[in-house]
Image (tube, rainbow, N blue to C red; front, side, top):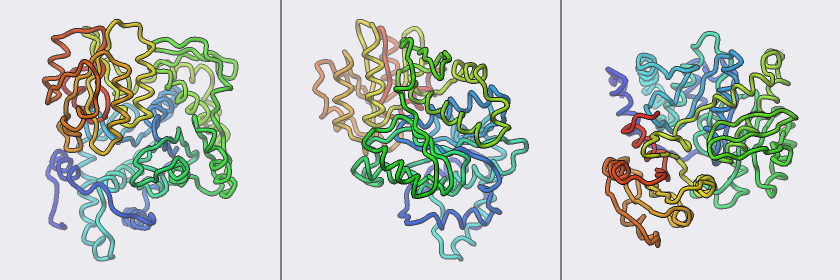
Length: 430
């Protein structure tokens, strides 16, 4: 292993994509050891830490848009990627360069023998890219803050070595039940693992049954819990592609499609208002005009994103039942005579429940299979569908060709971020 040296970024990406995805963990000691080999880069930047079943990426997008509108230098760590690997690690409007990706990857590889000598397992895929990202952020000059998205859960996630200015939990629904637990309470406790002692937690649209767990956890850690309650917001207009809301007496336009983005905007607003109480530098620049500009200009690829006007094609990376429900709520608002869904879902998901929700909202279902190995096979997926109009098209390229050549008022690709990534890389977005 110590003889490995990647010659280019593509070689590294091909290698890291084939590293093991999970390893049993009871603590973050291994991750802390890895980072100690690089002078603890995670201690050298300020951050906001975001977890939740859904809405993490959109909340990051709202936060970044507002903070950039205020002139702050903002880095982000998100997953998975939609267009290219480098977008996981971003600084302002730029993805990490291939040069930086390559150099830091080789730096990490040089420590592999030392890691083994100390009795630790080698990093998993996500641990590796988290180390890489943290080293990259620690070297950036004039960086104001990093928005760090949790990979899975929270308590034992590789990112949970940071001490953020604010922790955020967008929502809690059932997901990854084999790993995080089979009840909302168990999953909530895993996500609440990101709350540090004497810190601040902002929660989004959390199920009322879980609020007491949130409050108790924060009390036990001498931390403050700030709730984002939709009842405090007046919704003036819910249009197909934007919403107008009154928040603290001011009107804002939310320019991401779907009513669920109101939840994410409100969560981001509360995070930013909380940030203003932490340091006067945030308070000086974050005001109504900046919020308004940031909310209106926000963009988040792969989430109810229109990638073609003629024919109208939308993509959404919803990959669990809660995400699917948010998309179908959007679809039900659309006054179109015919609505088509093109679906491919990862094999480890709740296929039957997700399919049932989808088929109740569309006039036609196309089943396809994305090329990444996690995709459910078509036979399994189709066995759950009872819809009267089902078409099977074995691959994404042919499915996209069919959609383009058989125009209907709207076609939506959904069910997986891997599917969305594949579609987006074929079609040049608007």
